[in-house]
Amino acid sequence: MTGYEWAWSRFRILRFVFFMLLIVGFSPLVPASLAQYALTIEIFWGVTLFLLGRYLWKWKCPRCRKRFAGKTRKWLFLPQYCPNCGLQKYSVDPGAAPGAAQGPSRQKP
Image 1 (cartoon, rainbow, N blue to C red):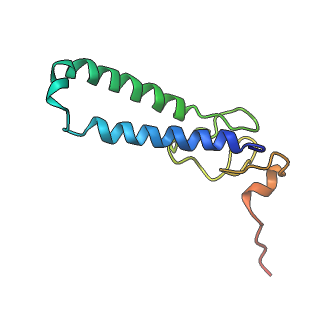
Image 2 (cartoon, rainbow, N blue to C red):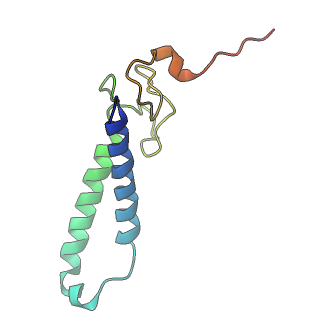
């Protein structure tokens, strides 16, 4: 993988796992053979979900290594670009100019 592709693919995988844990954890489908371990499973699920959510919340920009979400609360979906260095979300080119990530500027005629 080139550039920041590895970091972004890792973010996508972790976000997918977070949502799957969230969905499966609230599912009432627990086999009867595991019913005796229900409390242990729920505690493990809750701790895992908390730690994974915290890791995603503190997701670092692949370029500047600061929080990609900045001070916003959009940590699951992330803003379109890093507020610190301007890296566009899911950008794989490490040589992209910081100002170019925000798109072309529109000037009124």
